[in-house]
Image (cartoon, rainbow, N blue to C red):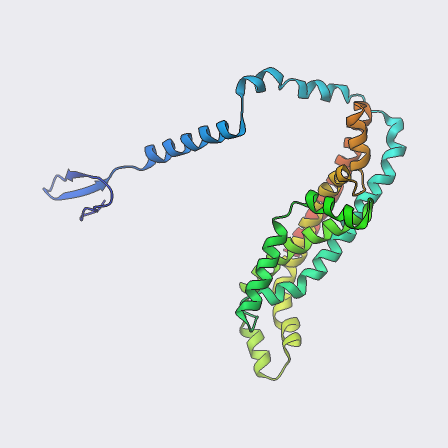
Length: 274
C-alpha cells in the first residue's frame, strides 16, 4: 500500500474505514503472463515445434528402447577398452585443466590483481573459452592433432580449465583478505601469503568444483567419439548408425554403471570437503 501515487504505473484509489485515502498499484502478473505466453509462442514458431508431430512420432523413442532389450552381453568385451579410454580421458583432462586454472584464476581475481586490465583480460579469456562447446573444440583439435583420445583429452582439459578457473576466481574474490593482508604487512611474499591465508579458504570449493567437473567430463567424453576424439562414443556412434540396438543397450548399461559409481564416489568426497 502506498500513500503517494506513482505516475509511472496505474493505481487504484482505496478509501479506508477511517476516511484515509491510499493508492494500490495494479498487479503486473497478467502482463508478465502475457509476455511469457508470447515469448513461448514465438520460440515455438522459430524452432518449428509441432505438437502433433511429437504426439504422432514420440512413441518411436520407446520402440527403439525396446529394441535395446535384451542387451548383447557378448558385446561387453568390445565395450570395456573404449570405456577405460573414456575414463582415462576424463581423469587426465580434469587434472590438467584444474591445475592450469589456478594461476589464471589468481590473475583474474580482482582483489588480488595489481592491474585491472590483467584481471579483465583473464576473465575475458575464461569467458571466451566457455562459449566453445566441448564437442566443437574436440572437432577442431582432431584436425590439429589427428583422431584419437589425445584430442579428446585436450578438449576436456580446455573445458575444465575455463569452468574451474571461473569458479575459483569467484571464490577468491569472496574470500576474507584480512589474513592475507596481515601476512603481507609482516613481510611475507605474495605466494607465501596466498598459500597460508587464502588457499585454506578456497581449497574446499576448488576441490569440490573439480570433482563436479570430473563427473560431467565423463559424460562429455562419452560423446566425443562422434567427432573422432576417441572413447566409447566411437563404438556408440557406429552401432547406432548400423541400428544394432542390442549392442547400444550394452554400451549404455556399462556407461550408466560407470557414471553412477563415479558420481557416488565424487558426491561422497564433496560431502567430506564441506
